[in-house]
Image (cartoon, rainbow, N blue to C red; front, side, top):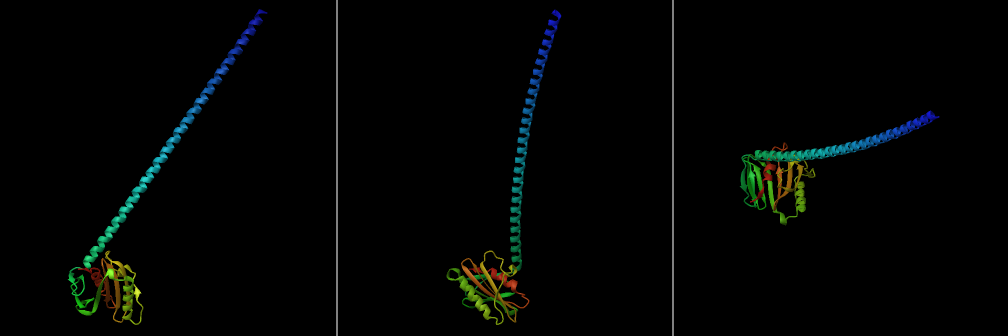
Length: 239
């Protein structure tokens, strides 16, 4: 009887110890799981923050690159414009090599005259710049005060005069840049042309400062002198 009680007591103690061991193991397991979960969350947050930082850095770098490219394009455009301007100035200088500044006797203007040409005043408000060796190749020059001139009316009068020089054609406006002045000081430039048996006749009007200038150029069929007439016409300015 005594041995049976001891056996029951030993079994009860074993069961109690087993229960205590199980609870401790489960608590440790739960604690480990929570710690692992917290670590995973912290790692995920750190990775997310790192990814966000990398994205922001990449976007900032892209913006800087775009800004640098835009600045480079602006510099290239500016350099190109300056280069074109320098080239145009050099071409004008070459086209007018040897030209002499000449004053009109009857009008308030001066002009660069190439050696092969001569300027003469025929009447008030009318000067003629002609080729010395072929006097039928010439340019008629008239100037007016911009303040006293209705520009649109002056254009109308010019085209009417031009039309009267030819019976078989209506004046055609010139729009090709190669046929127009390159001088940036000229404003409101308009040019028209008719064809005669002797060659094209070109009428051009523009404003330069306080002066309105109107010219009519009489060339041959090969347009041998048009460029020289045009370059000299661009230099007309007030005395």
